Amino acid sequence: MTSSPYENLSGKIATRKAHAGVIGLGYVGLPLAITLARSGFAVTGFDIDPGKIVALDAGRSYIEAVNDEALANEAKAGRFHSTSDFAQLATCDVIVICVPTPLTKHRDPDLSFVEATSRSIAATLRPGQLIVLESTTYPGTTDDVVKTILEETGLKSGIDFYLGFSPEREDPGNRDFHTATIPKIVAGDGEAARNLMQAFYGAAVKTVVPVSSNATAEAVKLTENIFRSVNIALVNELKVVYAAMGIDIWEVIEAAKTKPFGYMPFYPGPGLGGHCIPIDPFYLTWKSREYELPTRFIELAGEINSAMPRYVVSSLAEALDVRAGKALSRSRVLIIGLAYKKNVPDIRESPSLRLIEIIEERGGRADYHDPFVAEIPTTREHMTLKGRKSEDLTEANVRSYDAVLISTDHDGIDYAALGRWAPLIIDTRNIFAKLGLMGKHIVKS
Image (cartoon, rainbow, N blue to C red; front, side, top):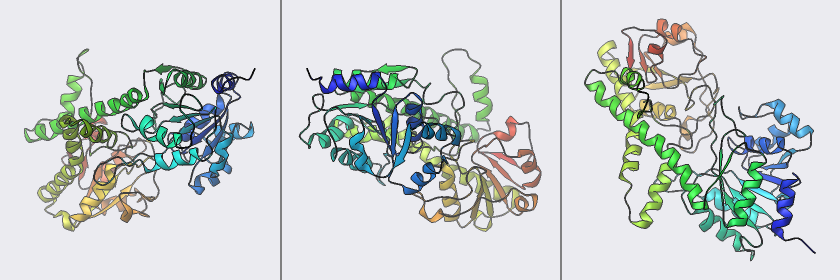
């Protein structure tokens, strides 16, 4: 008797004989590919960027979560290789989609990468494959978009191939959790797909959490990021209100978090960065219009967080005027930190990029220093900044600027020296107070 596609794939996953393909070798895809390889699967990584393939073939990782040694170990063992040849998808038993899901200029979902990838998979789709979407998106994308494209081949989900969703939960720079130890939400289009999802991810990840449907799993990811967006917006709004009252929001938060129940600390900043929090909530606001339901709370949080870079620049302009008697339009500003969070090279949606633009829109000049970002690469929204290089933090160079603006509080910065050299410091991260470095020229924003 011949086994069914489901039984055949189940057996391959259980014995680690399933060949996995990961499409999109960025901050999500590459760590996942190496984690799968470490668990015993043969993995092929796919990416349309030839530069990534060249780097990986040379044994060079461009993602902090995957070091060169880990990459070399899996390549040497024959468990990992990368390619731009999507025809090789035909050899994969499990295919995981980890491509970008940005927003358009009108804050509508841009699913062009998901759709193009789904069509590439459809070109070689065969019975017995499990297709997984990990890219963050609105509830219904997996079943309504990916499934529709794949079923145009004549093959049917749940009968010929299997379809699931598992939201990525990567946190660049987090030393306590990595891909294999972060609990994994999984769902499938039907019971068979869900069982395959549990078996596949359970082979590589310590804890797997199944939910009832792909739409539910998609909603889990959005809920996690909306939770953070709303709470960060709250403290950002409180920051502005308390500052007008002469109250230090940072002192308030430190005192409030001593309550052992009913409170969780969130911290203000110059704006939101990273792929998730600034973008993902708007996927739900867009989808909710289909049901004629408003998402005022989520949209208000987005407005508050998006307004933070302008608030910071206004604080900078006021400080320059009051403390230095100089207009922002005649000032040079050095921004510390281009990455969206400390101790990582990730500049996706970084508020620092917007800070540079706003300062220069107002006639000033803005440079940056970041030990993790030597040069600004090509970005979707900030093309005019491409090629700018990180400035050196020498005494002479720092003193040549009218103000220093702390946007990202990397650990490797000599803040004591900055405090001595800079004539004016705008601190959006409270790093100087945390280090006990005080001065009348240091202004919190």
